Structure formats: C-alpha cells, structure tokens
Image 1 (cartoon, rainbow, N blue to C red):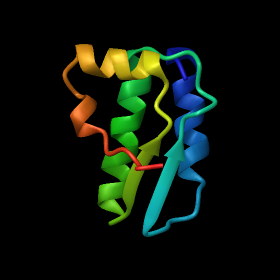
Image 2 (cartoon, helix red, strand yellow):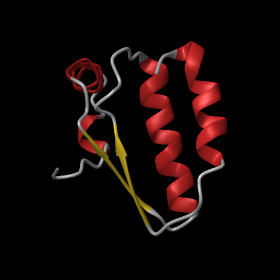
Image 3 (cartoon, rainbow, N blue to C red):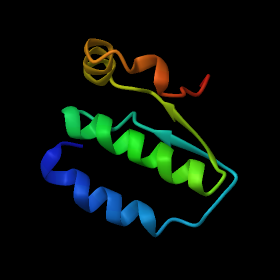
Image 4 (cartoon, helix red, strand yellow):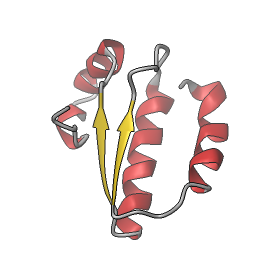
Length: 81
C-alpha cells in the first residue's frame, strides 16, 4: 500500500457496500509509506461521513513505526483482534 497503489485502492474501496462497522485487516500489507497513512485517514473520514465505525487490525510493524514517528498511531482505531 504505497503511493503507487493508494489511488487504485481508494477507488476500489469506494465500491464496498456501506455498513455500520468495518474492520480493515492489514495482515497482508508489507510495503507502506506516508501514502498508506493518508489512505487510512481518508477511510476514517469517509466512514465518519457514513456513520460507520472503522477499526484496523494486524497493523504491520513498519506501519506502526511510521505512524509513531508522525505521532498519529493513537489516532488509528485498532481492533482488539
């Protein structure tokens, strides 16, 4: 989920049906950059507009490190799973 992929992922995610709760499992994500963090926050903004609760699970260590450096890790709601 890097800058080269984020636009396509955002378009694909817009086609998902609206739900009241959504858990985004990031277990398969290996490559991240600042665009990944931007994507997660865009999903949170869209979910808020739709009154949907979004949580993220299995954050890869490199994403945790990057979010920590930018001081935003605590702003990403994480699933207890």
